[in-house]
Length: 203
Picture 1 (cartoon, rainbow, N blue to C red):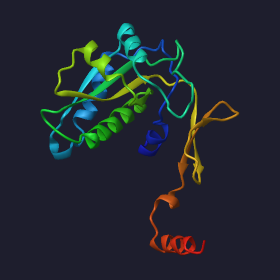
Picture 2 (cartoon, rainbow, N blue to C red):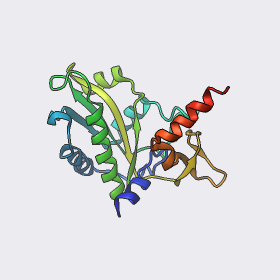
Picture 3 (cartoon, rainbow, N blue to C red):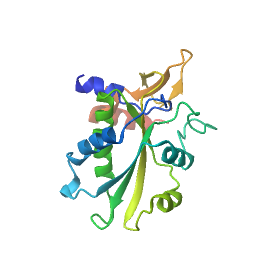
């Protein structure tokens, strides 16, 4: 699978085959991809908590919030929930501020690795950090950044070009549509910008 196909298949999934297990060994293989990825100043401040057992997965599911764009959705129903989770932490004894760059790079490596394995994930930032800290006995210097849900994806996702609408939605065909801005719209053109500014002053 080429890099473009990997990236196209690397989506945020909201439905999984829950009965398809993901082993801790597989999670470690994905974390190892993050480990060898670039790190700002090579500080490598990220740590990870892995979960692949039912009881811990249920706790995590009950203390996260899914897909803010989809109103009144409490996340996938039983049978369609993730088979595993990765909790991403930053070690504040290593890096006092920042860390988003490292987390972004790590997430990209993990998710591309997952896609190559035929599995996928969803990045979740709405987390009950107090509950997680107590449950996993996380020391004060480790800050919870994100939770990554992992599983075998269920359902299809396709990309559609858009002028300005960026909210994902489910089409009449049952396929989740993810709007993406057109290539020419994200490449800055000074001349085009000047024309827009000129027209703005006409009104």
